[in-house]
Length: 190
Image (cartoon, rainbow, N blue to C red; front, side, top):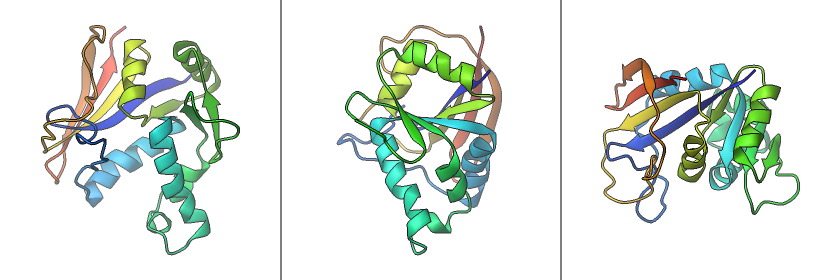
C-alpha cells in the first residue's frame, strides 16, 4: 500500500508563488539537490500533480529526451522524472496527458485511496497550492516534506489556506541547507 507524501516548498510567509502567480523557485545548490530532489525521487514510486505544475514540469523534463542541449538533459535525474508514472488532477485536461501520466477527475479522496492501494511505495505530490489544499482538506497526506525558503513574498497563494481541518503531525526530521532554506519532514499522527 502506498503512502502520500506532500512535498512542497514555501516562502517564510507560507506562499507557494508570487502575487501574480509567478513561479519563484527556491535557492538552489548541490546540497538542495541531494536532500530535496534526490532524496524525494529516491523514495518516489509515483508522482501526483495539479494541472499547472504538471504542464510546466512535462515541458521542462521531456526536453531531456529530445534535446541534448536542454537544461533538463544536463540534470542527472531527468531519466527518473520522465520514467516515473504520474497522475495529474485536472478538470480541464482531455485525453492522454502524455509523460507517462493519467488523469484524475472527480472524487479526489476516492481516487487517492485507489492510487494508494495500487502503488507499492511512496506517492509524491508536487501538486501546487490548489491540489495541496484539497489533499490536506481531505486529510490524505501521510507525510509532509516542506522546504521553507529564506524569502518573504508578501502576497500570493498560501500553501495552507484558511479553512483546513486541524491535524496533528509529528516531526521526523529538520535539515538546514547551505542556501538558508530548511526541510521540515512531518508524519501525520493517526
